[in-house]
Image (cartoon, rainbow, N blue to C red; front, top):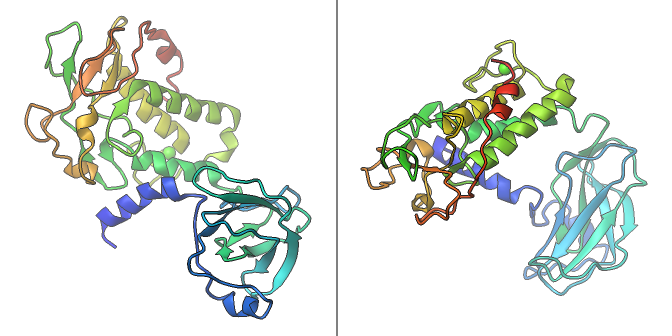
Length: 321
Ligand SMILES: [Ca+2]
């Protein structure tokens, strides 16, 4: 799989996480003898906590189906031996949910032995998951992988630069199309638009997480997101990436830009390093950055408006500078 495919697949994981569907395979022969009927037309899934479950914690998975078929019980299977180690009642139906016609909660909390397992019910099989005391170990830093992947300006996942020509101003106190440096930050919502509001929220949570749980974060990445140690927790490297961009979007006490790029972004799938959308100034020559005027915008964008910017909050929270 090439780098492009890896990148796109990684982005799609955001939408697919916790909804993996695996067709019955190795356990199939074991269950045919137990009276289970498999129908190719059935569309059912078992959603689990993909991080796993601690032995003494509540353990619930969710069975959902797009068919009308119901289930009565479920089985917990040891992933190594293929043997059933626990059988539970599916209990009452929770009915339709989202796109699904039926749903059940599969509670296997009373099973507390560490190991690797998967769940089976009807025609659905869950991904393999772990039960263990350390299932949450490393989770905090794992989440940062996605943030690094979303970086604009320099993208450490692709080890290449992108959107370095951002941007030209719209609706600001300066003439439209004035060039200012707002390259950086994170791409937003699986497209390449960027917002001060959502970025500020993400940055706040990174800083708050480090403030409250500094001991859970490691140092395996540099300021630019590439692998290496720089003596600073990676969560602070990521927060700094967000803060640097927020300050660019807030260049003066009374100036605040909120949105970078607009819905013209929504074209075919492409790597950010190969983004050639023409926003009216030439392909890949820069993207519009919208000033927060407090007035409705009339561009193709859908930005959120902010009317009372206060830069002081950024100054006091700039950790690691
Ligand atoms: Ca670091």
